[in-house]
Image 1 (cartoon, one colour):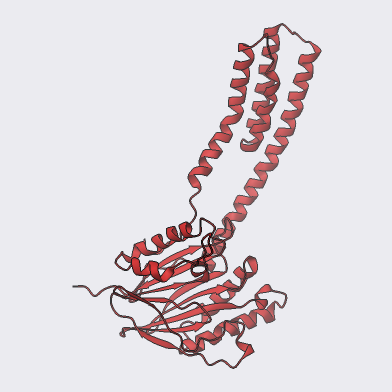
Image 2 (cartoon, one colour):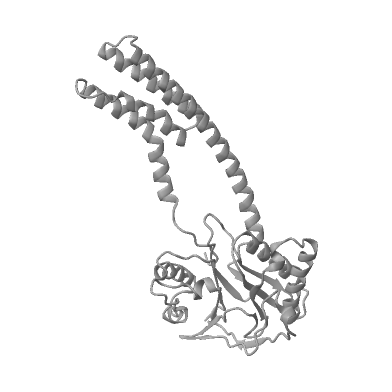
Length: 370
């Protein structure tokens, strides 16, 4: 599918660890009894039965944890009878210890289960919110195809400080790719404000300069409503694009963002911005006149937008990722494969140490049919 998010593969390993964890209590019971029966005169191993309910509390529900505890007590009693202990004080003491451990393990299991249920509910809500903030892009919008790579740096997160959007407007298509300064929830908050401002103004603003101003205005309004918000303290680099219908050109406005790479045939060149504007939320530091660049963008051309999580990724020797060289090498590859190749190559180059949000958007004008 042209539009997709790439994540770190971990599902298979997690399932393997989880299944092994559930099997451990049963293995403890079986192995302890076997070893104890096979070495009755040398060493007693029944004391290890206490591990079964303790391990069960980690992965099993409370009833099952109690069941493992009762099974441990029954097996301990049977082993004692097999030795002829009867109701010896040692047997009674062992049973009391097993009963205490079982009760404690049952309480731990109950607390863990409730915590997992609460976490599942919170995660479900967070996933809905994340899908609203960063909506999936359509595979095709107007005259162009869209291919997305998005990887949040924070573990378990689906969104970070990088953001994107593409909308169909009267007369063409408008896109935005940006990167908020810093990380964490404050960066996510700023990104959500800028996305809201873009969506509200994308089909109303006469041109890209007016749309760029609306981003500052939206952040300022949000800051006025919530002065304590971290969003008012952060800036963001942004690329705004416009593809007018019926014209083989693309218009771009940069607010301090890394220049996108334009591919025409096998040639790959960065788009030159004569006067890039200041980042969003820094426009008040100087008089800003937004300048729009217009470059040819015909059938078969590609434009790669990216954040500094791509371009500033370093290997162990400190060398930056050679994005332009890689894109030139992939010029003949199908557009749907490019971002998959990019993701794999980034992980390899950075030795799986990608510690910044990564966003890349490949805009493709399909070749003319025939």
